[in-house]
Amino acid sequence: MNVFAKLCITGLACLLPLAAQASVLTFRYTATLDYMVALNPATGNYEGVYDETEFAGISFKAGDLISGTFRYDTAVTPDQEEADPEYRTAYYVRSPADFMNYRFERTGYSFAAGAGLDPSGTAHVRDVAPGTQGRSDELHLAMFNSDDQFERSMFLEFGDHSGSMFNDTSMPAALDLGQLDRLSMSGAFRGLNDDRWMGFGAQITLLEQVSSDVPEPGSLLLLAAGATGLLASRRRKRTALIR
Image (cartoon, rainbow, N blue to C red; front, side, top):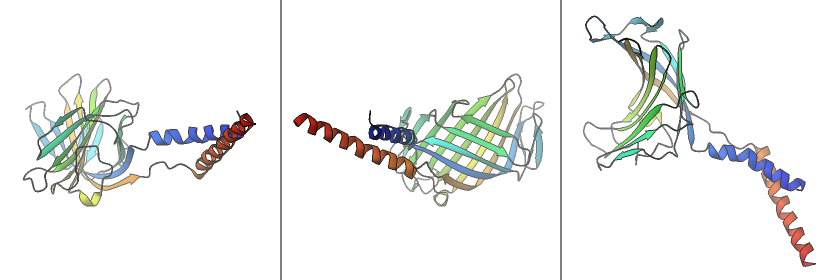
């Protein structure tokens, strides 16, 4: 194999992983903790907490800053669909590339799921006819993980009550903060060995897409040089055969 062919293969090797990731979108977000809800074992009631509480040794305080990232694959196909023309909804099983996390800045407590850590999760996309009363376009993302004490869950919801955010029920190729009138994240803890349960909700205040990987100029040059060299090599062989 000549040097030009080797360059071509090297360039392709650099670009193929990037092509495989082209359908995967990554976002950063920042949120502010609004409220907590906990199950009262004595009464069996779920009680709201709007200032500060502690659960499983973790402190939660209204106003806590939360930051994180999430990632989803736009190329996945629905696992199930509802075809009502005014209320179309597609349900998805999360792809192996999907990932969600959060971190409380004050306490350092964090959660992460997906991308090899724990693939358990679901998503749905709802596309409603514009002007449909009581309904909204919606993207809902959920992921779960667990240890020997708790099942932990994380949810992200993005909605637009005007019904103009989505045109279909595929996983959205973009999320625009300016188009959304509902942006929230939430989490929950469920005891695996007892009845303990606690959840929290937060409002997302910052949302931005992380730039996708773009082939470096060096990789493109390698591919171009290799392709040119390979073509030239083939032409020389053809010429030699003709002679």
